[in-house]
Length: 390
Image (tube, rainbow, N blue to C red; front, side, top):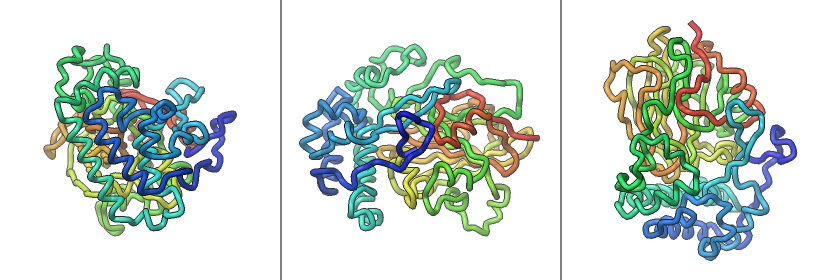
């Protein structure tokens, strides 16, 4: 889904993108990313932040001065992704955040692609800026950005557990805000086989890894052993041969707490250090570029109580998401119900990949159909996404 014909959004076409920014080098982009992160420390307007929707570049002369030529991208190229809302067949265009565009140019746009992908300095830069942005959003000064963020991203404040915006001491506190208990009802609550959405997100589902690679994930090392950081001959992989996958992508505007999709017993948790690449679909769809199996991530194993089937729940960090915090399910043997909170991401969008045992899941048909077009479906926590077969 790197680029879709606007007259026929269900028909993938070859990506239309610049080989490099017209007037900027990789060094310009690197300096621009650093300067924009620094700039967000003292500015209350999110259209002057790293999370600014890229279309705001048309009026942001200060960004244009940092990264010459970048404003042309908002006019001449696809700077976002088509998404379809659950229950609708009409896609809408979701603008890409500025940080995602800069991150992609650093990683694989331009003639320096081969050198850049393995460049230790680029990896260090992305890590440094992710940590720095986290510190900025943990500073009490960052609270001044909350109202602007609400307005820019049309946040539904009537859902908030704490509706008084002045009570949030930092931007991060608002970013990983809690919702009212009744804000995300569980569909098919009394059916123990139902799987629900783990997050407010843009969702794709695939009945096998091969299907996911055919339609969506183009990384050459994308497979279950790499995703779970296990040797190919590990006995722990036995239940996950020919696995089914659900991929939940959280955008900056989303509610950023994530939840359990099944009634389950908590098993082992494993943290895997890694990179901080952007997880925007245009990066995930990039041939030969490994995002989901290269980024820092934490894997939590869950056992579906009714069937005893195993599920691997993978929370993946990304550019400007240096923090995956687990609030539930940290103790092995804990019993959780669908919808129970597991944790949250701080400062940025990110992704969850849930791996199901082979031949155990039947995803809802509309999700399967959308994913094969391919296009993401906008869903919320609690929505039914399929069933685990007995």
